[in-house]
Each structure stands twice: as structure tokens, then as C-alpha cells.
Image 1 (cartoon, helix red, strand yellow):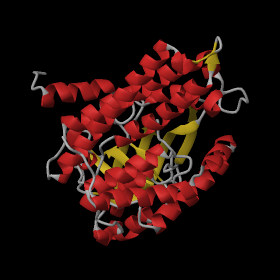
Image 2: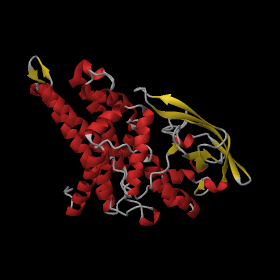
Image 3: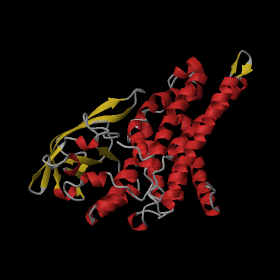
Image 4: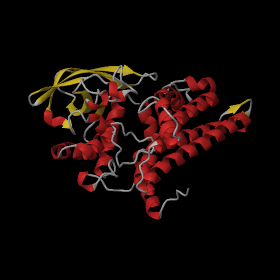
Length: 392
């Protein structure tokens, strides 16, 4: 395969890099890592609004919805550069990647007018109310109920692992509207304001002691019927829609490449027994192995975008990219911990922590990578059934 970029695509990449070098210089990245979470969030919100004003948050969306109608490859280039430069896209991520595309395909004209411009401008934060304590990989088993009451639905239930629910203004919520049909056929999708009476958000701290996840409780929350996305009882199909937006998983390869480059610099500068670590054949071998894997992950991601650009629908190919990319994140973090030795356990704010403690943070955060957005087991099943044609 030849994934060589055209001159226009190279110019697009250079334009993004020039912007990011200005907006995210190394000294700013270092100071943000030392900042408190609220300060980091405020910076991220303003950064996303800058991207929104440039029209970059939704580069692949149709122009009528606030996008630039760029190609899949151009969208991939944008995603790759954002991940490499560790651009903070958290405030806009669910809106631009999930909510907006779902509304574009399934939403009413009123929903499109109300929500899409705000998402495109980076002026709203969304969360995703899908997973429940007993409905994760088997998402169709969700039990949160939505009962009709005139012009409203009354929602009762619980969601878990809801990223940014404590900061979000809106939630894309899956709820059961018909308990008497097969589980896939009784789910509806709603747009829910997070300040509605009856919603309680409780924090969940992850292994790195970071508060991104939450539990969300819905106690007789009244949601207007006009906030339903798509048809009643057909929400599962809206949730599972394969959308024409680039989702190659290139962020795993790009983020891994940045981490690997930092480990290479560390190995050149650090010494053991009077010799640079880079001269240790074991260290050299591990770094070379990771370099190969980063490139494999990148090629798998480019393959997905290339298929989309040719009008094909990636299926198991996307699962291959997601599976390899997330497990690469874990292998790379583990390699970093081995190279740094006991120093690798130091937290980011320790003055003795190499690489600002990023390896320790990446190592702890990486455990969730093979669970979120479909576990590795789910991805392997898809590859086996749809890619290799194996029986169930």
C-alpha cells in the first residue's frame, strides 16, 4: 500500500502543525501538567473554541452543518496531529465524534439547528449515557427506563463510567422504552440536559487518581418527547450506525509515537554504570520493537481511512486498528516502566519523576484503553467472525 500524501494534504498537515506549535509550545504543556484539574479544563475549553472558530473541530462534517467537507484522509491527518501534540479535545470529543454525527443522520431539523452549530463551535460539552453496572460490552442489556407521559418521557435508572458527566451540559442517553420485545428492539435514544431535576452525578476516580468517570442517577427525570433522536424503540440502530466520519484509531499510533520519541531521548541521556542506556542491547531491542509496532498501528489506521476514501465501509478492519492500537498503548507503557526502572513509579508532580511522570500516568491510564469503546475480547470476536469467517 502507498499512503503517500498529496501536496495539498501535506500543506494541510503543515498548517495544523504551525498552529499547534504556537498554541501548545513545550513550556505551556509543561505548565499545564502541573496545573490543577479545573485550570486544565478551562484551558481545554478555550482551546476547543479556538479550533471551533477555525472550523477545525468538524472538518469532515458537511458544510451545511458547520463542517468543511474535507476528505477522510484530511480528517485522519487532523486527528493524527492532535493526538501527537496531546491537544486537549476532551470538552468537545463526544460532541464531535458521536453526538453530532448521530444527530446529522437521525436527528430532526430542529435538533440539528439547536445542537450542531454549538458542537461545531466548541461551545458545549456532551457526555454519553450508555454503559450501566450490568450493561457494558453487552450494551443491549441496559435497564434504564423511559416511560411515556404525555409530551414527556420519564427516565429512571443508572449509568456508569460516564466520562465528563460532571462537566457536561448535555447527555446522549440510551434508555429502554419497551421491555416486552427482544432487547435490541426496545431501546430509544434521548438528548438530555444535565441540569434537569432528578439527575445526580457521583465521581469515580480511576487508578491514576483522576476524576473523569462518573456514576449518573436518573430519578424520574422528565425529558421532552421532542428530545428523542430517531424513532421510538429504534435507538439501538442509531447507536450502532456506521457513520461516514473518519474513525481509524490513528490517535493510538500518534500518541505512541510521541511517547516513544521521549523514551528514546531519555535512553540517550540517562546512564547506568557510566554508559548511556541507549547502548544497552536490551533497551535498544525494546525500543526498536516498539518503533515497529507504532508503525504497524499507523498503517492499520491509514488502511481504515483509505477504505473510507474509496467508498468502502471498514468493519473488522476498524476492530483490528482499535485492538492493536489500544494494546500497543499498554505494551509501550510497560516498556517505558521497564526502561525507567523504579523512577517510573513516580507521579507527575514529583520533582524526581523522569519525563514529568508521563510514563506512570500512561501506564495507569492504559488499562482502560482495552475496555472502553469495546473490549479487546469484543474486537477479537468481530475479527474472527467477520474477518476470518469463523463460526460462532
